[in-house]
Image (cartoon, rainbow, N blue to C red):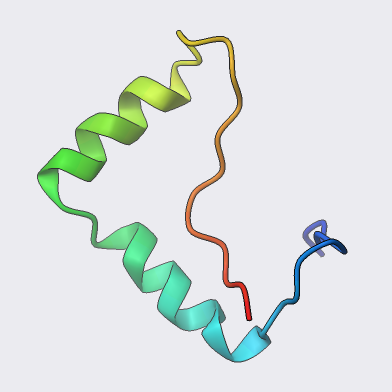
Length: 52
């Protein structure tokens, strides 16, 4: 089971929508996330997370 952020309200009904948004990103989003995932900025980023 994935770690849940207890600081933000979470709506499980939005999980499927968030998954679709992650899988069907625009070309610009794909390029951006490739750069962010390489951690060249020294930071950790998380993609769309369903928040209430």
